[in-house]
Image 1 (cartoon, rainbow, N blue to C red):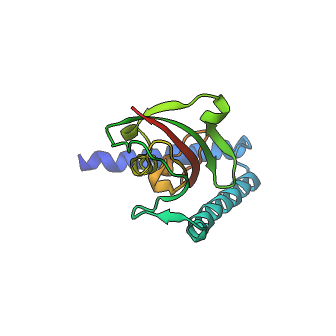
Image 2: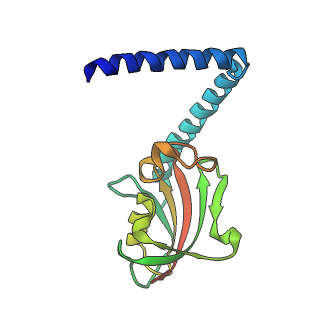
Image 3: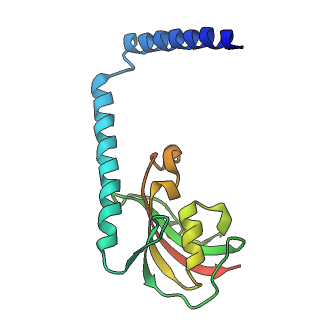
Length: 170
């Protein structure tokens, strides 16, 4: 079995070299474009880090042991959901620079989710909230979509901001 590993590795390296050469010849690998993408990525990651460091300094922001950050915009007085609950919420999701990637407000209709079927940051936050509450969340990447992100919507390792209004615990 060990004999197969080395030839396979060599074959993969050869294929990689051939494809790299092909893309270089076809002009699909543009060093300037690559540099611009790298710079944009570095700027994005810096913005993420700055938000995680500066947000806890804001009045009323609480940081949990997991790193979730929240600020209560409106206290709730109703039922507190569990991981087994389904909730109805209004929400707005944004990247660190403020661009909105999703919003039930924009669609004009709240949405229902099972608490345990959401990103870990939401699952944690919802179980701390009560019906009627409205919170602002800053969710570190490890409690959001992590390295994989969401293609064409949320970059990898993105810190996310949410405004969440817990309307009903079902």
